[in-house]
Length: 373
Image 1 (spheres, rainbow, N blue to C red):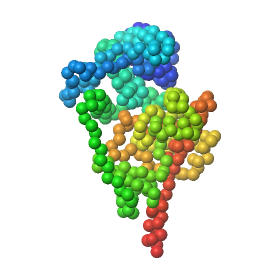
Image 2 (tube, rainbow, N blue to C red):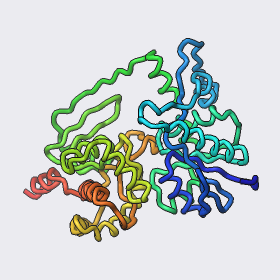
Image 3 (cartoon, rainbow, N blue to C red):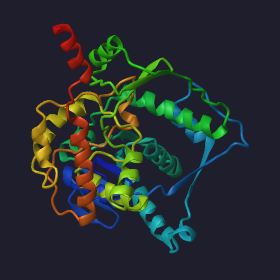
Image 4 (cartoon, rainbow, N blue to C red):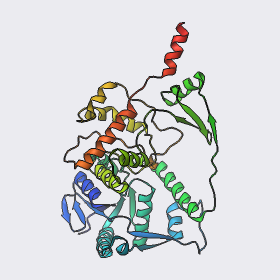
């Protein structure tokens, strides 16, 4: 490893590193990393650095401090000891991998944070950064989808909404600290609307693009309108775990492992999210992706049932893309899947098709008949 404007990409697991390395041309495989095209791609092997909160010291939470420095001041960083938990000497392997990452880190001009796209990924990277204590220029590569185009845009082109990302990261770190100190409790009130009048339903349909029906309800939470319908939503992690357990007889651990493999094989978006809505740009991608789903051996025929995609699951009420979005397919045709991967993928495909099927409003039909009469 020689310094030549090296850029080191750090991700969580070797599977993800392998996918990233292939996409950016880092094709030389070495012990603990890939190298090529000016990039080194390496992985931590999980969250190997423990960030221990220091409540006995003076708590620092200042809005004029960089959120990363607030995190650094309030935590101590050490390598986790998994040996007793996993039943074998994992720590020896972790130490060797950390030495590899540190060597690459020292020889690099820029470090790219390609950890999992959620707050846990960012906290894991910050823990690694302050554990090494070697200042470097850092860029975030946000990869909710692991297709080649997405990887190139995130890592080589560096495309990210920096302003929104920094605000999200700052809010997330402060919320993390507040939660640890238990210094505040969030109070949420809700006003339930038992019945939706035709006038309210029409406004909801026009403003939010939601197909309302007679069996729909709504509530207002913190001045935000929340809609409950009988229509299927996109999967989030909770829904995926529940349905995989009931429909496929998968344990939660098996579902998580299988979903992660589908993600690194570029077939689904990042699955470990709590949101089940999507931003508009992801909705637009589904216009193309649905054509690939038509070739799905189990559910492909469902694609012919609709020409338009329902917008009822678009982002509303100020959700952030950095808090994740509903699980969608990526538009790539699956190959070389294990039987378990195929089962879970087909279950996700069915939910995607159900979620995007446009359902005509029963109320509008009723109103049209009344006007005619």
